[in-house]
Image 1 (tube, rainbow, N blue to C red):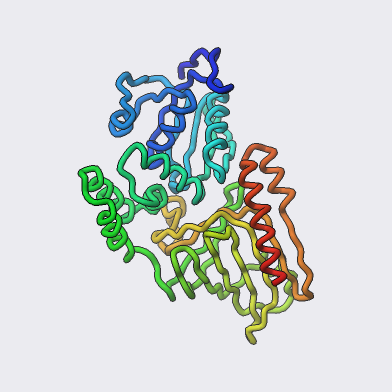
Image 2: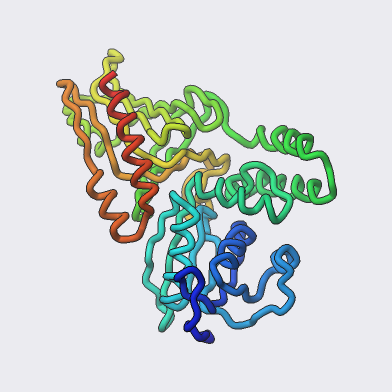
Length: 345
């Protein structure tokens, strides 16, 4: 890779780097990179047209492409270029999570960037000013399969001047049959800040957008341990609400007595009709999934009425390590107050 002179700055940031960008986030990320002083190398034909990039660079210091699960991007490149990119991501995307990875390529550094629900919405807002874009573009593209293909068709119609309201209505009617309904099985995918995924399977009790209730028949041992439950749990009810950033879990005995309740902080959940990671784990059955990022902060209501909060210090440590933003920590603290109010009420 060609290293470019880094002597000039833009609003205090180094400029002169070139990046190659591929995937479903390419248009929005290209706009962020150009605004931040990057040049774009080897753009796709669509990106070149959208940004009038006539003289395509061949060399680049940063290579950005979709993760296999489409839940974010991976970047590989020079350390200084990565740091400039990370600064732009933190500035524009409040809930993005940046994980530094090891690289087997000499002089290159790797990053994994998780793009939760709010990041996808912000990227939508950026993209809609550049190209025909349906609502929830990046989330629907991340769904893959027939849902992603329907988005391409809808945006092609927008580009040809079709009525946006009619296109959106037709898109919704086309894809709604792909999504699960009440009484359908559902996989819960709980992703921690380091990227590890814990899965459990349940049955949908009620569903409205991504506000849903799921019954889990086999209560995970770790959950019982966190709640301090020694006796047998018959089932648990998991309730999510994208507006509140809270996941509410209650464990019940066979007599339907509440044995313990926990509310933990999580990014707004996203519902994936084919699962959110079928290519990563082909051994898993193709169940639909609900996915969120667990922020590691838990408010626990024990059987004796005692309330306990865990994980807030660790969340602040993640911000100190520049993995998450100060804005995300601020949101988490606000939502924690809501969780405690709910448990006391």
